[in-house]
Image (cartoon, rainbow, N blue to C red; front, side):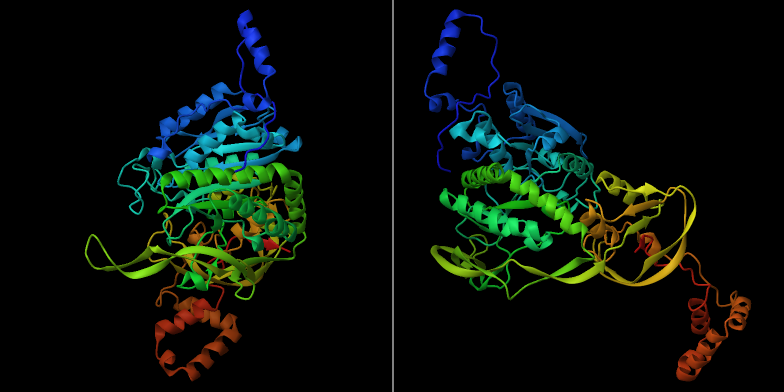
Length: 598
């Protein structure tokens, strides 16, 4: 980043002046050129150039040191985690006001940074420590970025994983020499937990996120994908997940600014390399993060969420410094565009509330694309392994190339749902209600037992992943059919208005076919169990009575006899036909319990 002319701003807490010589010294310093005043030495002694990343206690101690030294900084315990240690936030507020609601009312732009979600990917931890230190000591006049912007840092999110430190975690990278473990204390991948919210970490994060309501959100990561010449890549906010005014902000202002700022520095930024074709020169695609991931979760609340992905094959010092440069670029963008960012979010909510059809599935657009410059290495699938001596796939770093490639970053909606006026959520599904409440969803409880005509879905088919995925058997393919029914609801059930600020989150969590809905994550699996059955012998008398009561069913049975000789000779199949086509079959079986009122 280029050096800027510094402001005469002093963030440091001053002790009471007691000696005349000290008074004279302070007066003399006051009249020195501002550039000298700004160049205070850093407080923190970071060792990332030595391939060392701090331990969890060292991380917190360093943020405590900044808190103790600067009145503009505060380290806060912000909730529990699965390992019993508190999750912290570190807040830098130039006004020395640390109440989120008061800061938003004062027109401050909120930037939230999350680090260490995967503790083997610690670049963001080191970069955030250095960045916080430099901001507070006003290095190169960077303190001006705090005039209208508040920075909130989660120093270390996956504390259990950080404490499980070893030189034998993260097998694909050689530096730093020791890191934490990917899973948390409950062995959960926390970057798959933002909507199902199984962990204490995720519940605490949700409280932090809803409390601060960040305008910009960054989660720092590392990737072990293809090798190329860059130290850092970006998974940006995917424009098609946002309403038009926010899509315009992303495409026309935010991304050009961030890519441009990084290009001016020492570390050029490119989109995350996600293969679209086997040969990268034929094109890469932009990701569209679902709300199980942190940036996708942020998008459902009209927050500009993104991820940096450093490349493990670059030296650790470059990975940290490139992340630091990105933090500078992001904070500068927030500082210079704060009012436009906040207004775009406000108008984005208004645009969302006007939607009649809401997209719940997308397909990548292969017609619209960008052309970007890509600096890679020639693939070499015949390199000899130094371990086995056999050919293995890899890259030849002696043969770098620069090429113009296609970048597919747009998506088209492929499936819609009609936006209801209300959802009715039965109180029996308390884990769902707890998560809705945690995310600030507005609702009211039914005051008395009420028969309500609603549209309900029946789960016609769903498939599960064959093995546990982050503690669940996620439903992959889900098909439904809808019926209008009058259903008895009870006092205490929730009536949830859909057109509220959290509408995007609501629809994606309560529509069963949405990609990360509560249904897909097994929160409603008890509806897939049939509770009433029939005995081919015991059902005889009631089956006769049913055929007499419903002559149209008897006619269907006779037609089935005539058309299907095998069926006509199968007693059990005929009894099942009667049972399944009559009022004996329970209406609640496979009926998704959340009703819609249009």
